[in-house]
Image 1: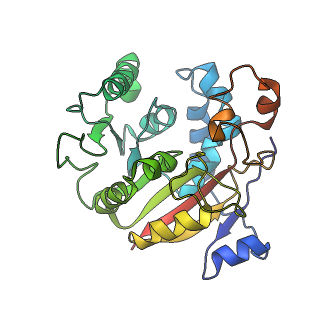
Image 2: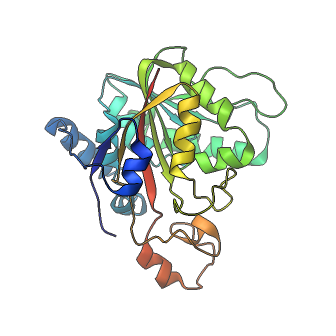
Length: 283
């Protein structure tokens, strides 16, 4: 997969400029020390070889640098799932910062929630020296409840991050609630960092993202209406090999391979999905 590391800094007319190819790409300066530290963590011995292999598709060092992370921040990761990014974020923040894993509520008795909570608990227990300070908070209440504890204390977080989750929240209709919880947790001017499967901009907008792909201009509008301002966009996680048109949507591609062995070599050659990488500020 060809790696593209350009960054677009946003002003009025962003969507038009990008689609017309008029906006120049710039490379912001990143701390050499932070880059070295993130590189060390992304290749840490505690990470499985399979997880480290996905660095080539997910570009965690470049992505976290783009969002402006440092080791003394209070950072919330929304729906960390199996903890792929937690393996980098928790060790980074354990001494000087705070890492919140905002996932399922422990009061959620659904089988899937219990399974994902166990995954998180097992990961923490496997390396208490790295993950022992992780603070697990509920992203939203289970269906049986009407309220939930905050994802982080109100106005305390420097950064809230979400990686490839928005399509699920659009499908479930929970995205407005989750955006509101993120906005409430962030400090004024705090960063909302988004990585998401990117739809073909020429395709009709699907507000439910049934294919797993999300229209970039549409989702920028939704997020900005929730009290954020787009500051920059990056092509760090772009994949020009992905034509966004697959029998089982984004899940046709690795790592899911929804078609099993059918055309597996073809989809392996494409790699993981084309993705938008967006940096917002709370306003």
